[in-house]
Image (cartoon, rainbow, N blue to C red; front, side):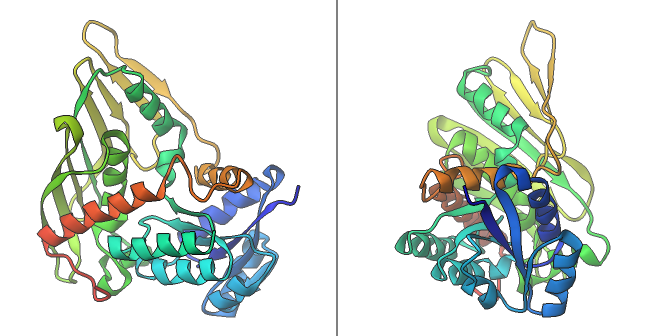
Amino acid sequence: MKPLRFGIVGTGQMAANFAAELAALRGADILAAGVASRRRAVAEEFAARHGIERAFGSYEELGADPDIDVAYIATPHVHHEAHTLLCLRSGKHVLCEKPLAINAAQADRMIECARAHGRFLMEALWTRFLPAFRAVRQLVAGGALGRVSLITGGGAFVPGGNGDQYLLNRSLGGGVLLDAGVYYVSLVEDLLGPARRVQASGIIGSQGVDEQDQWLSEHADGAQAGCYVSLRTRRPPELEILGERGRLLLHAPVFCPTRLTLVRPGEADEVRDYPIEGSGYRYQALEVLRCIRAGLAESPEMPLAASRAVMATMDQIRAQVGMRYPVE
């Protein structure tokens, strides 16, 4: 069977990580067939470094190449909608980096376009495909904690170096919520369902982006979650799920966890390790392969309605914090 050929849109660190994972999956009917940048020389250097066959000097060129099956969107947040729409309209399936968009309205347009053109679309929220979080989902669904009524967690880091400067760039969709908070919103809603109500507060820094946010969300059956993210201090990112029969700690780093601790009254703490292969980016690529081979328009594990609900929750948080982007 013909391998699934990915075209990488963008040449930043996310793109480099994904390219390395695709190189390791050549035996799994997946390969990186092309990379696009706004500057051909940059694309050519990236292609040479990662052993990629084609280098494109524009995103339109990648979209027009009939040998590219799936576009992986790895450009800054503010460009996710435009680059996803370009590739969908060019007949490509799309795996778009998290967050799917800047806001729910953009997400709606992306989802509508995918359906209109009969193409597969999925948000690349890689954590939801990792072995540790799949185990969390199974433990909660299987009743290991009993009824879950509270989830709490957060993390903090201080940006440093040129590679992190997009975080403070409002015009690129910077800010801590879209970069780091999306993990907490997405993981919580995977376990509790979409938020029914949100209360949030935060701090907008001197460069016009949210540098610290905390929020309380309410979900079905009275369940709640309290989370925070910050660019102003340091704290390893963790998540704890509390139920009537026990609690489950998803150890740091929450975006790429490999260890869980299950704590239940009267029993010894149970530590479970879930090693990942490579950097962890391969699991979402394998899900794209599985879904496309099965003729699915979206992933049952990362459905478009879930991505859209996450965007709507983050819209509420940003509205209460006072964070608005120029494109809005």
